[in-house]
Amino acid sequence: AQSVSQHNHHVILSEAASLELGCNYSYGGTVNLFWYVQYPGQHLQLLLKYFSGDPLVKGIKGFEAEFIKSKFSFNLRKPSVQWSDTAEYFCAVISTGGFKTIFGAGTRLFVKA
Amino acid sequence: KAGVTQTPRYLIKTRGQQVTLSCSPISGHRSVSWYQQTPGQGLQFLFEYFSETQRNKGNFPGRFSGRQFSNSRSEMNVSTLELGDSALYLCASSSPGVGGELFFGEGSRLTVL
Picture (cartoon, rainbow over the protein chains, first blue to last red):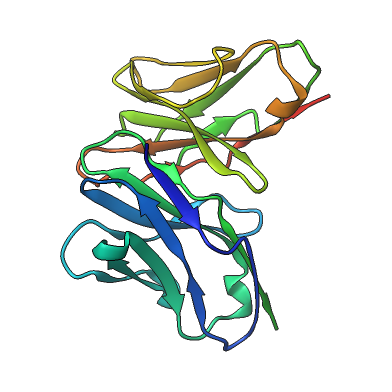
């Protein structure tokens, strides 16, 4: 069965610090990968996605993620976080052509001003 | 373009009661997925519908059911409510050709007393 593991449940950073959130998935076939973000009081929205091609993908607000197929990983990065990045981040995976997106448990990021 | 609309936004029920939640997807989206979100558990997949057919189902008891109508609107029902059913129930819609990208509603927050 597919599963997604996010390594950190809570992360606290100061503004301007660099961010890396780990995500590993288990699935033997071809997958599409996503990071979603849920800002306080808002609905979940897409941060970035990987379908194929360049394994380094860029998303909104300066976020990027790197797909490493050999490690089944899709880690999220941002060089310099801002207070407004305080949110919960979810990694998600769906098998190519599938109908069921599996989410990780989420990482709550708090950025201190 | 209107987003995904979920009703009601908040509701309180007592154990043993049943509840019906509604979801109107983005116009033109024919796939609707439902998730249960609880702190520390992330998003747990309930089921996915496309053109009135359930294509996939998560590992929830039979008390959780859903359906989709010809206009793509969807409902989910939980019968014989238990305290552990307290959660945020999210609906997401999707369209073929976007690789499984989900567009979420704001959710229905259910409290079971």
